[in-house]
Image 1 (cartoon, chains in turn cyan, orange):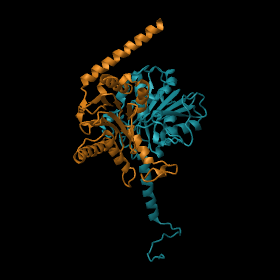
Image 2: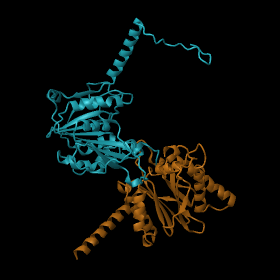
Image 3: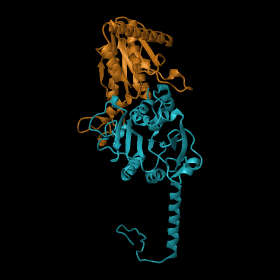
Image 4: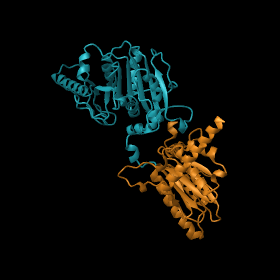
Length: 281
Length: 252
């Protein structure tokens, strides 16, 4: 076909043709799609004892998910530090930003971005999940379905702790420095508990794993509460971790917690990048 | 809002220069600095940041002399501070050569502030991300304390003391409550006030504080960590004695 400007374009005919060549092309496309899907699949690997009891579903009354380095650091310092927790599994996935988990069967190394599950020894119905790796949008649904598919829905309640940069918090008022970091909460309609901080105001929204989990809980009528911490520091920071303390009130009814942490222990979990950056003095 | 914060030379409809305001956020990322103007002494105290083990501590200096009789402490982007300090130092010497007199503290502050303001009105340049506390003595012997910020404004601190950087609000509130004529009556008292103000926000006590003083007709002197530790112990003892007195008052 000749265009107005004089160039010649090849045009595909819309007449239906039964050509063998087309099938081959389709096969190739299908193969590529399948390969990509396999690569991006989310694998949940449980430790042997848990895998056995998974013939039925895992008994779980409380699931606590921490998304982000500060939320994960808070749980490590205040909850997982008491040494009565067992690592029971991990989720491995691959996407452009989380390339580390190509080894599916081997547990991720400490310090690597990963998605880890812990269970309390004395109260095995309490599960903790720390997610510090990036989960892409197309993998969120899979992650949620696979994780919640392993848990018994009845009697389950979920708490999510998540980090977010304060630059993404939209408000008509000017945020003074002393207000940051701060918490905002969001609940599923099945949740009857009192939130310990103001609710997230419009037009702010949640994205990523916290949103996927909360949506799942809303659809399946699981009581869930989410605490989003807005902070102005991009690296793990002890002051940001301390902001999650109100959430401890709910947790302390279930498990024994570190009663009063010294600032030193918290700082241990805040990464050393703080000292090495001379950008601000 | 986001359409008006990309260029420095664009006002938003409600009159904000967002880049300048964001530069002030960069200042809040620097550690705290406090300045106290006494009768015969000016004091600058800063919170020392912990450095990596392999790094020489002295390379990260928040307090710098601009001339024999003027010095400044900054909070914010380290590299921007270096440029501003260099230009200020050159201007101090240039002034001495041209006018045959040392700069007044107000003059050099105005020079720094004008430099900063220029960068808020040029296309293609961003503002300096630092606030500075400039202290010194004029040639008539008066002690002065000024503050500049990224917008290029500067103000004279009539109230004897001010703070910039990360927890500046807390320190400022402390200074408003606790500065009195007596608290700066002697040199030692002024230094202790600076340390007390910093101890409000510094996490590990005396070893993370750096202090510099200028006395009339003397040049900048950095206090040694031993001296600071001694003063910190003195302050803690005074605090305990205060608490004891209050307890006794309550019981009687």
